[in-house]
Length: 392
Ligand SMILES: [Mn+2]
Image (tube, rainbow, N blue to C red; front, top):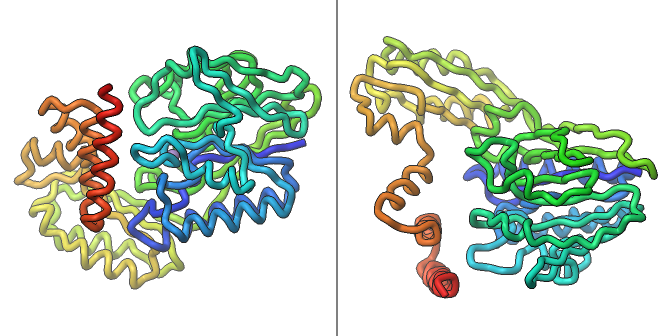
């Protein structure tokens, strides 16, 4: 028997670039094709099926079609909602809609989890595997829920799988939203999601913790930092897990290069970039600029470079200037360039004395700019309602 472990598929509008959003769907199709052609017994998805808790219609239709293909092949998909699968201020997740239409099994649907003094967790037995899990959180996780877990284990199972959607402290204190030790013990396989890089064979108790990572690159950092995307195939028999394999999924080639700008004029740098571009068939391009430019950074004609690049066939072009300095770069500016915009906003609001919940509301409002005022009004009302309830 064998199952697939996949996670962080992020179907939706991850990029402001249709080609890349289609790549994200293409990766999903490849994953489903693999499961069907290799006659996988079942799939475990560790959350973030969608990129947002309110996915656009095309994403809903796409996932419906793909889940129907799995269903026709007799391959069930077990999942817990990830942090992205839950809308702001919502209790239920979009995953539940698919559960109620019998297209997947939401392991945190009402019949599986019960909140009281303890959190009672039930699972499913399928093909002699016991599967249960805890969903991800939009906000920072309280280890609380993990501390209160009471799991109704089925000890007749050949293997036991625990599904979760958090970054454990093992991966670094800086990133963690869950202490590794908070995970329940006694499982053979910990199907982890949330962390988009792929990590395997993290020993825990008698089992292993596995992060398949995102199925397609979800941002430029992932394109640059992480070599591969994919999922795991795990074989097992009555003795337990017999093998774990990582399968690579690939939608396009990528070209990444770094150019040092020391003492160069903007026009020289532009030409050096353009000379490195080649005619191609949809390659992803990331150009990293570094060093001390002799001109101003704003003198570089990025629009022209991108225009030439797209004409040559690149599907996605990112020119990263975060490590590029010029004469006029002062500390403030440099700080802004090297930090994510969301980090700067967060730090600013924190300094002003807002709490995390208030910052989340502000963040949502910022993200909503550009949507219709009616939609914003509705969301704000919902958020204030949520906020009041949290305060009480
Ligand atoms: Mn994710």
